[in-house]
Length: 453
Image 1 (cartoon, rainbow, N blue to C red):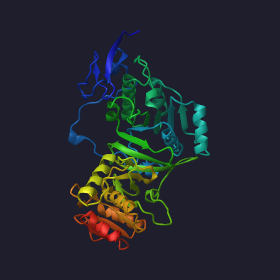
Image 2 (image 1 turned 60 degrees about the vertical axis):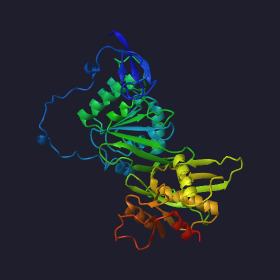
Image 3 (image 1 turned 90 degrees about the vertical axis):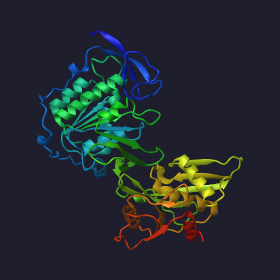
């Protein structure tokens, strides 16, 4: 048996040290070192992947022809990945327990009628077959499954079967036979992920790896794991809603911050073809406190409904609460309304909710949020088929947003008749839909005078 030694690893970045340290010298985080027992034998000599003989090449002689991507039946995932899956890529999928990570990849393999391999260290083969039977009425004969957790055996199976797709569920359950720490530890995750990356690059097999997340919403294991893989996807959603959002956090082969929307049904996850209609409530009458904003997720415009409730503070200290929106930015917008626009909201409770359980990061939703708050405060409804797309500055001016033409086209496609934008927008061309009126404004008061007169 090889001689064992102890080592300390940073749980944030994976930095290795011979003794415990209070502060990591690599990522400058405090109290992140944990002790693990590892083998003294170097991991480079224990790789299960056969190394191909290689030599340095001149950059001008490198073949620049891009490998054809693998096109899936899932159009949403194809667009998110940049036009399909790149051969030899490693995709890390993270998300909360029960959100649908395994279901998403299982139905992906069931729709892919070529040799595929599903490796599960968390469920038995019988459990996976029961779930597959609920998702699809027919199971293709090219679907292989394994309940193996040893990385050496997994690489052996992959080299024998040569599958077109490989799914690992999950990376925290795998173990390397020469690493003596428990599965899920930093050294095990790093070693097993390294073997999978070598396998993908030498055989051109695309690999999907499911990763657990911590209570902070970060993928469990060292941050180095996210740097090693090619694509990082985050599966989000509220268990109380039927919508699931797949967000591209990192993508070496496409745009980052792209999203794909799915609807959780009993038969699996169904892609949402028109997400703009999902987040807008189908109410028959106009109610105060609601406003529609057009945001961008990646390069995709979405219509989001902001719902606000403004009431007198009962307990003396006004409450500020936001769901799906940054509370700090909400406080900033309220301060702008108080200081620059003269609206007295300092003694009011303000509650803000983004419909559908969506979380907004685009500042282009500022004007919609502000108009929802003012609509609730005045108890006057905003006219139907009216939308907003602008950012609010600290001086109270209405600032322009990016990709305004796409936002206008999306609003017109969904039947909106009026869109308030910044007067200072420079990226509006003349080829706009005739069915929508674009209203340029420079101050919040101009929108108030037009809508609440």
